[in-house]
Image (tube, rainbow, N blue to C red; front, side, top):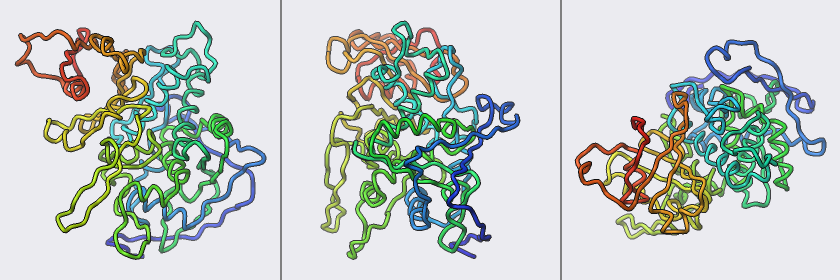
Length: 429
């Protein structure tokens, strides 16, 4: 079949839809080049006996692909589906044991940004909601001592992202059946190795969602694997396809039919903010400003742009190369001043997380005079915690003409007078 300049060949495959024989593949080790060459081992999916879900249908599969990447059928980029980064931690006991890492240098900026968004959720659990992890009182939350603690924090983060998209009322968890295809190739859909295999599991309690994610955490740590698309699909179906479509922008035409005018991911892998907002706020809005703003198109029509409606649980700071371009993103105070001191950092095509352990810097102006933040990025080259000492009181005019690192410029979008002490480390952002 020829479609928009692409040639597709489809072969009909049959699958057993009723058998409860699920399997997922996990590569041993941490996802390094060497570990990917090791033999694989099979790990079965574990679903509640009273909630084995239902197979995905063609209509849902097509709608998901169109909403995420703009069209279906289309050329499949495997890194978006089955070959994306796994949610893999450093070794427990490592100075960065709290951190996810990406070992594939060709991972797209968008996928890196989503990993860092999940990292922010993990840090929120470790630092400010550690009771759910039942950590020993002597345990440093930034130094998980076991794989179990790491996986529990990851499961909490994933469950919270999906549950938030359902407004805290319900969720749909997407998990893949390894050897079963529910949707075969057709003129409307071409297989991507993941979407056609999904089992959709509705959940009415966050405890059930968290437990199911925890029991199947190996699926999300498979490296390379489908983790990011599974979480994105789950968040979309939990919020509702029509609602996510509305989040992205108002539909065109007068027929009232909701047709996506935008999509969540750019096929070239560049960063877009809608999926980040979906993971943080439970809404897939591309707008970062506070509240609702109205824009006129010059023809007498006004467009409603809904941004951040309440103070965000996790922050977002943006720097796009210069002040003029950065200002066009109009990041509002509800992202700049979140409820906990954790910020997703987007600096052009780079991403990371800034975070602190003291909530006081968000509610006490005196605490903002001098404080410290950690910076974490997904790169495997970062081997130790980066601690930044931030001074908002005194200025060193002797350094006024010195080059300002990108991360320092980004921090000044929140604290305009900030001077950064990098602790003798050469700035790498």
